[in-house]
Image (cartoon, rainbow, N blue to C red; front, top):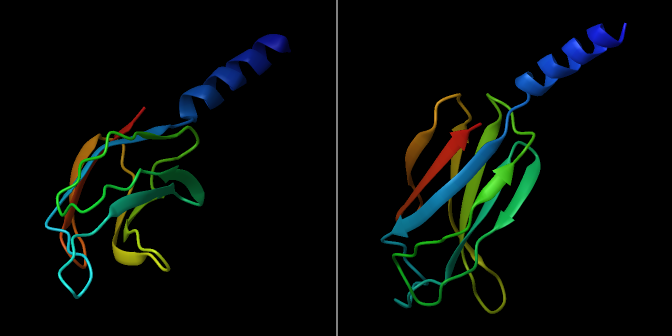
Length: 125
């Protein structure tokens, strides 16, 4: 009986998937209507799991973030969602959202936002 349990457990482990999101950068982001540069940051989800957010970069339209986000239980066909925000004193401004369905292959993604473009990579392990 224990051999059957071990075989089943090993198959479940193989079926589990994890996703790593990395290499985030953006180009041509715009700030407020007064022409100020944005203070951008990114929030990341896989399905309903919130992976965290990047630091914000002050006064830049072309940020690059070194943050990586790992989702140990994210599965193929779940939705990967990245929201780009402009940090403000009272209310942060939403600059756009990238939504992508997770597929087995690793991918480099280019996503057009409301203002500017977000680039990122993800890999499925």
